[in-house]
Length: 343
Image (cartoon, rainbow, N blue to C red; front, side, top):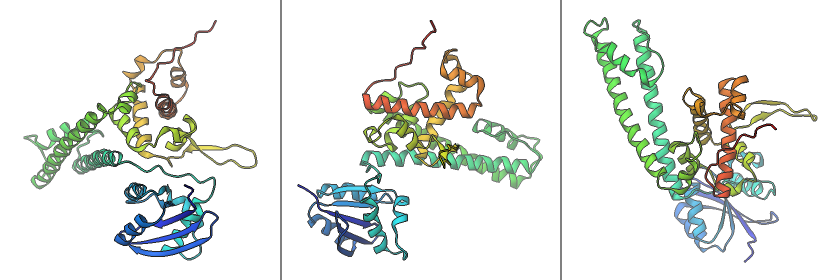
């Protein structure tokens, strides 16, 4: 059955604005509906292409409307903004969503499943706890610095902070020690929660075929594997591995004009969770232990000999992203490339 109607939806908490148009852009209807009336209206409407911005609750509505028989597309808000007319309101936003979605070159966001969104909550809960622990440790270091005690950065130096605070001959004021010991207890509690979240992520990564396959690659552990499985769409949506790496933001920003190519720094405009974990995984291969497994004549060894460590890590993360695309599209485990010897 051919679909001849496109409906743009401006999502909200209570009142939804919808804009119906034909496939050639002719306006069919414009309505403002409550949350309950919107569900009833879409359930009774014939099959249509429904377009929404990829914002809060969009993936929930995408799954619900797909169950009603509609073809749902999610579009990034930044791609809708240029099509908004002079006056900014809900009706103009819904119309701009339809206009943007009818562009033949437009790119859309893949709706997430319930499992992906649940895993994302777990993953980002751990990230939030790590940030809170880092903030508390830095507050402790700053407080001790005000009293002449220098503590290096890193969670591994928390025991040194405890030794300074609990020293019997400490010169620190009692009130300051009391507050810092309370923050130290907070760090211990946060570390326990982080360990619990990490164990849960590792447990999930050991049960899914995609995560187990990804962990066959050096530098990809349970956290990296779960990040890819949770936040990345189907690899079939990318034409090649370079497109996936560009989607992650592991490519330089372009300032090209007049036929002259100018490349800047890494854009950091893509999927930040996967990009961060891939770079951390790449850095693990460049430390003193990881370097032992790198062949001397390999591409990575040559890069390490002439480039800064962070630049090599980003280049390696880019290569890992392309390899992940190949592994998932071909349904194959990682195969270590055999170095070719010169004749």
